[in-house]
Amino acid sequence: MKNSFPANRRYPAFIIGLFALLASACAHQSPQSLSLNETMDGILTRFYQDFSPEELKAATPEFVLANISEEEKQVMATKYWSFTANVPVIVSVMRHVDQTLVPFWLEESGFAKSDLTVTNESYSYEVWRKEFPAGKIELGVPGFENHRVPYFVSVGKADKASSKELRLTETFPANQEIQPMQKGSHVYTCWQLEVQEFPKELEGDILLSSNRGRPRESHLVNALRETLFPSSEKPDQIALTWSDDTRTSMDIQWRTALSATASTLSYWAEGNTDTVRVNSQVKELYDRLVYNDSRVNRHTAQLKGLKPGTFYRYQVSAGNEKSEVYTFTTAADDDKFTFIWSGDSHHSELWGDLIQRAEQKHPEAAFYSIAGDIVTNGLYRNQWDDIFGYSGDVLKRKPLMPVPGNHDNQDALGNQLYYDLMSYPMNAPKGIDPESTYSFVYKNALFLMIDATQSVEITAAWIEEQLKNSDATWKFAMFHFPPYNWEAPYYDIQEQWVPLFDKYHVDMVMSGHLHYYMRSQPMNAGQVVKDFSKGTVYAISIGIKSDPVDPAYEPYALVSENKGPYYQTVEIDGGELRYVSYDQDGAKIDSFEIKK
Image (cartoon, helix red, strand yellow):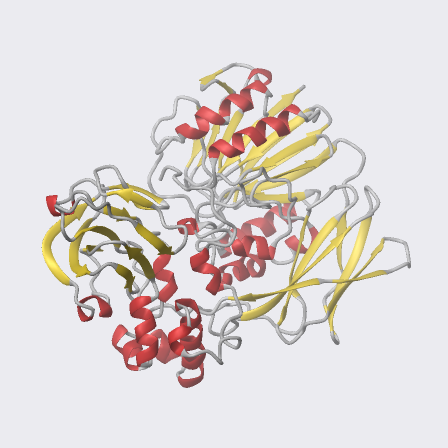
């Protein structure tokens, strides 16, 4: 699907409750004063005490309603969506016709189903209506299941003949998008679906668009998740990244159970007996639906002042528990290195096996990258646990420098777990979330790591600034959405970023998203050129199995394969580049060389 994500706030208002520690802090408040998120935390805390995981996994809407209080039910019916109207209004709730279960509050609160219908390009909606006097209007949750086509709302004057202008104020969520109810208006803030057909009764209404991810706020049916890799007091999920100079720094992250608050890292240069011990920065991560490990501590240590080209050993401690001793190497002052990248990993065990095979075959690799969609649901911490669990010891020895994809920022709900779990350069353009877009230099190469789910326009100016001020021999860009592809070309990226890649001669653009492999001929201004020195190579790869559909003909493609998973090595030796793509068995499927 074409990228239609707006620039996101780093802490979207309606998902803070997924990560905040709320239940204990709110114990003294009356149920009526609690928010929906606080109420959900309280319900789940009680459910975990009163019911087995098996009972909760089998929960139905009837089970939920039978086991929450009237006060909690009232919060569910009123604290999901609200606004104030200055005149009497008719509120229309557009509900997806394929959503089997009608939200419990809708009919109870006086809404009546009409015979009206609203459509967009993909879905049809039945219309439920109710008249309200001027004042505050409160609406309830879309249901207890995660039905990802939630209801949206239009509001019109009850007296259409009145000359008084309708105004809506005090909207919640606070970042509510308000549009006229007309053909072409967006139904969702994070999904390019537009109103197509609507009845005359809604003409002149104000449209309040929804967010496709909001049903998660009340998700209780088929909601529980289990991590296959629960935490303990022994440090685990140890991973390396860079947020500073690759020659003189290294960031090390790890996890402990909540009970292990104090944790330290010791490191020393090979052949040196002097050991440096540093305390970690600690953040508690809370995913209330991971029933077997909902709260963990995430630790970060940022090492500075290291020596270039030096082999270090390190060990993590928490109380009486210690990790194994692992190693890392800082970038040397030469121009020879190899990095490995893959397309979408989707927290797959298959990708974990792929990266471990890649490390065995190419132990010289300096770091790894993933071109987005690291996991399938970016706010599910158990899926990030899979990334660390399935990749073995690779990330303990080699930094991981990825970019987010649309699944990591699913439904435009933000990349919060990506930020919590990793540590990357804070040099994003203003208006783009720090660490989601960043650049770094490794030896004689510049890497532009771009979050393509955020503003293409804002990022364009940053790309030019980075390229204009770089004297790197090699220039690489990685982002999730491939500008050239057979299924849905990204014309906004072609228009705003590609001319900059041409102007400053980016050598390679690496992407994922479409689940197949493609490597283009050198391209300039959208056309194939004969010489690598005059064009950019565009590559798409996939770190899991390819989609079963064979891609259509692409006139710019030199190699196209549909038998993933694949990983790619890029070997730099001064002014020479050698690129090879491998399948999961280590067989070469593509290669080329560039000499400058």
